Length: 101
Image (tube, rainbow, N blue to C red):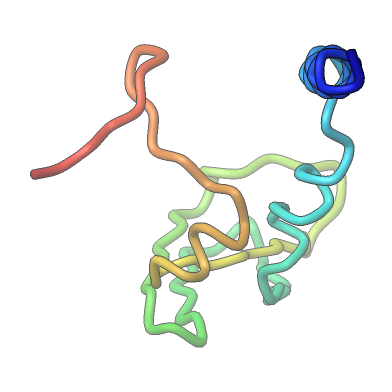
């Protein structure tokens, strides 16, 4: 009797836990964990940005529009597997996760 009560309680706990939305994961896996770089750019001129991790980003004049000039551009980079996982990033195509062999 006692064993069956324990099993029923355990199963009820599992069912309850599965029906609850996980509020922890969005806070643990977030792009907010990545360092931010902010660049001020003049949108009327061709601009090349060089990020801390070595990315070169070319922005031709007229590619961006804004009511103000210069504009602030915020960049977050995730190149290592650790950074990608920590930020909760995925690569998707047509709604399906991309994978490589």
